[in-house]
Length: 118
Image 1 (cartoon, one colour):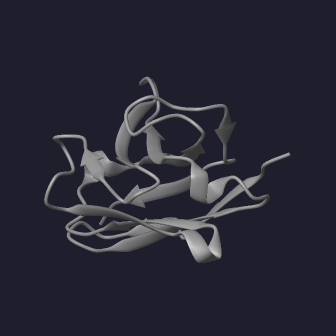
Image 2 (cartoon, helix red, strand yellow):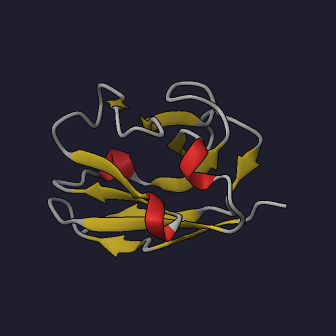
């Protein structure tokens, strides 16, 4: 059974930064693509960024140039560095494992709240 645990969310002012982490249990992390998704109130869950097992990444247009996805396969951990945060980035952020860079797989974390507000 794979478990994903996100951390690093919180309240930040516009223009600030946060770094999210996603720690995976089990042994499949390094063999699978992972992604970060977010869901704002009243909106559908959307892809923020994805990264292949080999480190090839892609981003939603809304976060290009501001967010960076990365992974450390030795630590079974993925990251999302978020800079120049905007109010519209406010959402619950989820990590996902088992799909590809653009389509989610079966494994989801519990989510971490990111609130961008002054």
